[in-house]
Length: 557
Image 1 (cartoon, one colour):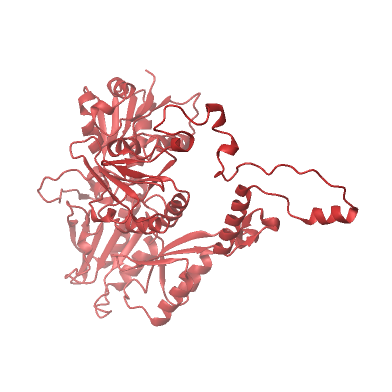
Image 2: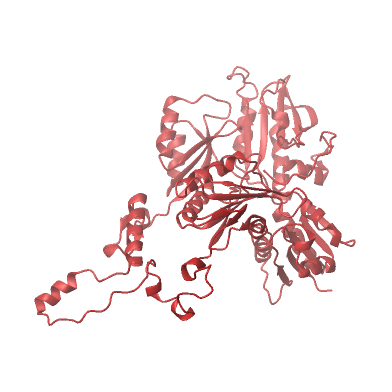
């Protein structure tokens, strides 16, 4: 039997708004692959298929599982709410296939089945807010740097797009929607209409019509789509409407129009257009050679559009500190002219593994290196997270290390979080923490791995709640595995060993971490990995979750 992957966009979730082909694909499939909540939404169309469901943020493992099943000869439906090609699974499935050397003519067949995206379903509940040019922007910075997202919001605001904001806010991401509002208010009036739609066409559907100034006074979460009007959007009788522009061409309350259809698109009928009517050509008068030379030195006539673009380029050059090319044709960044490309360098900075006290000269150097264009943010893990535009990251690291700062990578790497050992008074276990940091700090792993290290039985820095918790007590170490310190089902790690001899600790932890690095699925958190493999280094998994029933998480933050 020939395998196949069908990436299905099933729309907002209501059966009535699912396409016929989407229903057909679900019914003919052998395997359903999807996020747990989405699987529940399409259960009416299932008839005993194998189901592979995982949590949010585990998209890569779902795509890999789908490819594996299709290669085994199964028909696989990978499901996405809305449209699978817009913030859905379609692109990721192709990326996983490409990584395996897939070719369309020889590999497993792939069919992308479109669905109604949130921008469309939410717009229909608001009225007609996206009748004109519109764009979608996700405010989630898990996969895209926030500085880049801000630039996109700025560009869309300047260009007067109707904007649909996806993933606007979550339990941990709260500042993005606030900053987005500030950017938009710099370009649009406070009374610009805004629509907030939560769970469109689902049981808990909620629709709010408000303004750009007041939008944050209402509940906004991961299930909310925010639609922001442009300069022409208006509200009438509870409906948000963006004119397409027919009023420019037609008199809407007249049966007989002033201009015939063939006349409406002529430049003279659009005097407001930037590329409007050209100046009529003038007859040339006889010229002398000197006159010809003088005329040649004058700038040629330009359309209003060309003048506007030149002004825009010069303004951008001044703002970015770049240079303007001869005759104002293009703007270049000075670094680009020198063959250098700036990138955003991200790192976690601290005064040390055990030391928690910054020196004034360290803070001064940090401020100097970050500069006006960078940012510094304090994290709950006792680190300063920095983002620095630079073409030479190595130089940045050296400057910070030269003043005694510890600079560590961020992202899906091993991070050692140690207590201050009572300001160094309880120093016996510090060498083991430092050796762990030396061997494992910054090691790439499937998902960020926190190793908590506490220098006494008080465990006041919460090591027992981290992925791997180490507590020094009575000259030996206690070990905790699989802690979960976020969400409503948070729980401490499982106590797996007491009294580990100091000389055995570092090698043991290294074996555990490297086993996870090699065998963990992409985006699989350590506590889920422990549960899946059942046993690590002889330590058997036990469920440490509190005995309560909660609804599945929608966001993976």
